[in-house]
Amino acid sequence: LFAMPETGIGLFPDVGGTFALSRLKSTPAVGQYLALTGERLRAFDCLHVGLATHYLPAEKVKVLLESVKGLNDEVGRVSVLTELLDELRGSNDPPNADASVIIPHENAIEKCFSASSLEGVFLALSTYADDKEWAERTLKTLKSMSPTSLKVTFEAVKRHMGKETTIKEALTNEYRMSQRFMRLQPDSDFAEGIRAVLVDKDKNPKWAYNSIEEIPKEAVEEFFSPLGSFHPRGEVKLEL
Image (tube, rainbow, N blue to C red; front, side, top):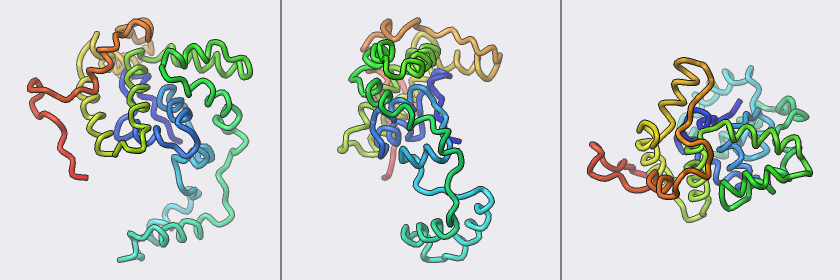
């Protein structure tokens, strides 16, 4: 099971999530959809959108680990690992292909989540008629998430879509974002999200903003700006 539901706790898809989701083999729109909604994917959908490269039944994992140990110097060769994975998979396909949460709604996802702004996504969902039940359900989900997290996440995925953007640049952005999400309201909803979901568990967070329209553009931009002298450690140092 794959999911990055961080917008529901006032955070964002971290550890490179905004970079990975921005360049799926399906479309960028699917990446935005997964980043914003936190939709859960099983093996079939992970392969379909490009989040996974191989499928292996759970009972074969132990055999895989033992086989990898025996590869010695060839363990770093992609072709060798691919051949091993294909051999162990055999004729086993991911289960529940008919339960895909992506394929039945791909046209709707492409139409609604290709918008150039988060406000555009909300508008598209509110007026989409061809898959109305899904659109209404998805819009309801988004409206339950932290507006600040949604705005920052949408911007991060959008920024990292460019082919010229490197993983180093994305991780630098994410580090800046993570540090600013540690602030208290109204600057960040993270503490409130943790309280509502993990501490008190009332699942009733009180977000700093009532809607995405209330959030100033400058507040979103600040999440991506370089860390100044206020930060004890400064910018993250990466050797990539």
